[in-house]
Structures are given as structure tokens and as C-alpha cells.
Length: 140
View 1 (cartoon, helix red, strand yellow):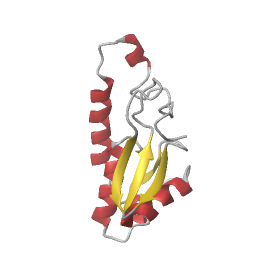
View 2 (cartoon, rainbow, N blue to C red):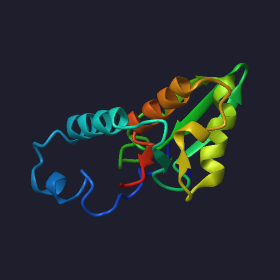
View 3 (cartoon, helix red, strand yellow):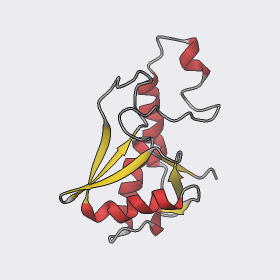
């Protein structure tokens, strides 16, 4: 389930949401995650291999001329603690978004995303998804 009622995914040990968060209630985990996500997005290139962080964290819904990507990455652990999380894209991005969902758990090269456009557009899409915490790059 990836809607408003879905819990955020459990990330592997060593992820920023691990024991540090539990040990220090004053730690601003959202700020730490935001900085880490920006760094990961900036490190991407057209040859980077990427995939969703977990199966079921996103769903794509077509609304008029938009592809809406609903996700649970930043949901609260309290039931309906936050509004539904989504990213809006032009309808042109729908195939690329569906392709990432369909190919999980395999990694996909950024330049191979199903998007009619240049490499910069594909890299921009991967960067937006990485900053949202939805996409991860294959370790070197």
C-alpha cells in the first residue's frame, strides 16, 4: 500500500533512520535525510544504475494531463499523521515512472529510462526521485 495510510518503508541498518533517531529525540532526521538525498541526487549521472528503494512505495495515477506519483516515503508513523505525499509530472513522464515500478528489483541505467527526451531530462527525473527518497543508486 503506498497511499496516505501506508507506513514508510523500513530501510536497511545503516540508513539515516536507524538507531541515531531513537537515541537522540532532538535530532532533526528530516533535515539530515534532506541533505543526504540532495547529495545522492547530485552524484547521479546518465550512466548511474537506479531503482526504487522498495517495492510498493509508489503508484502512478493519470489525472487529466498529469502523471501523479503517490508515495509513502515521508509518511508519518502515526495513522494519517501527514497529508498524502505525491509528485506531479507531465504525462510524458508516465512511461518512465511505470518502467521503474515494473523493473524493480533490477537496476536501470538513467540513460535507459523510458522518456522521450535528452539525457538531461532523464537525469533531472532521476534527481527529483532521489531527492524525494524514492530512488536509490547502485553502490559502486
